[in-house]
Length: 333
Image 1 (spheres, rainbow, N blue to C red):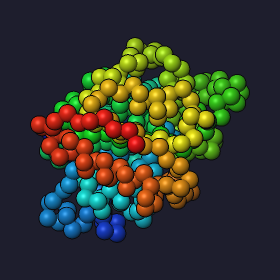
Image 2: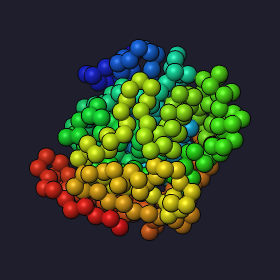
Image 3: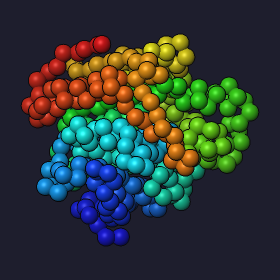
Image 4: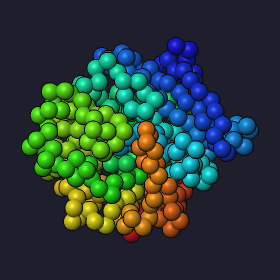
């Protein structure tokens, strides 16, 4: 594999123009865990006019949730939330987790776990984006993706000094409800355990597969007051170690239908001096477009959460000066 990086083998597998966007797709082979077949696809999106001049804005990494891929942020036509962020001046990077989207299915897919993503995959992706941009990074991540990012920050596997800010987004309907936990637990969980892989298409909740170990651990964390992973990853209390500015985006219905650890719970655990929480009625603030083989792409509406996210990203202290930022005042809106 030819390398576009000094860190590990990286191949630029595609460079295309989609509408007004330049789309570069990289395939990373970190070789940092026992399964050496792991490859991670990362898509970079920039304005065509800016790319021609070599001008790039603040890098932001969009991380998808469970049973999803890059199409959650970017449609086949080059539209959606990712395009919205590029038009706002951001240098957008979209990783896809092991076996999702353009990331090939690794040999030991059935044994993929939250631990491995936090300890191996996210740090590799983060270091690659830092290397390519030379700038501190912002994160926008949805539900399980947000859990992974916050976990990586809290456990120290990603250097917080290289983070500008982070946005955690709660899905309109939590994963436990989309899986219909009661039926899932009583009638289906044992079947997926034997297979080792849960099919999002068969369950009608997404286009991608997840390992049984990943989903079991995530649901256990989301629905219990105390939980550690089998390998000893200490997830409880880790959020208190986060110092970077964090915005939590939740749904107004989460108190009524959400599990124990909803957006408000996550916000309450954060002790960073710069944090914000915003609650929305998602039926009014977001629209989506579905694709037969690529899932659902988010399209922001004016006045919804995405305008507020853009404003927050631009005005948190470390977004203005990521090296000598003063303490920020905690805000809740």
